[in-house]
Length: 159
Image 1: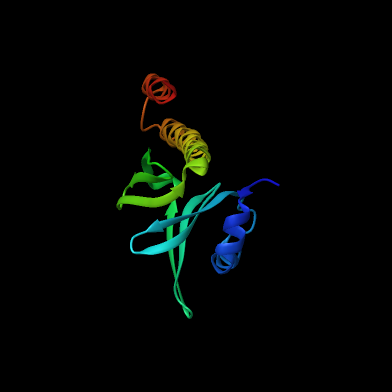
Image 2: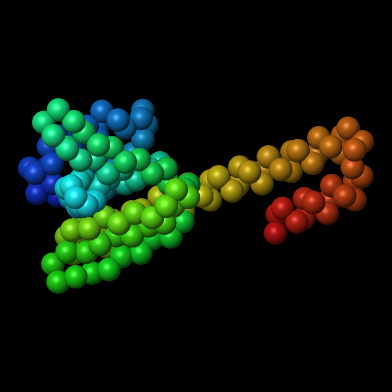
C-alpha cells in the first residue's frame, strides 16, 4: 500500500473517500488521508503527489471540494493540542487551517505534505532552469546575445 488511511477514516468518511477516488487523476498517487475540520464542516483531508484536497459532504446531495496544487503551498506548520492538532498552510490564494486532526496522525500528514510539496517544487525548478538555459541558447544561436553573455546567464541560473 502506497498510502495511509486509518480504519476510523475508512468507516466515517466512506462517501468522501469515494469522491476522492473519483477526482484523482490517472497516475496521481495518494499519500495520506485523514479526518479533520475546515470550519464549520468535517472533511476528509488528503495529500497526493500533486495536491492537497479537503472534501466535505455538506448535504446528502452536495459535496464541497477544496483543491490546493502543491506548487502554490508556501508555509506548512501545525499545533498540537491535548487530543487533536491543527494544520496550517499558506498558499498563493490565502491561508488554510485544517483542525481536529488526530495527534497520532499530524506528524504523518505534515511529513507527507512537506515531502510531496518539496518534490513538486524541485521538479518544477529543474525544469524551469533548463527552459531558461534553452531560451538563452536560442538567443545566442540567433545572434541576439554573445557567447560571453550566454555563459554568464547560464552560470547565474545554475547557481
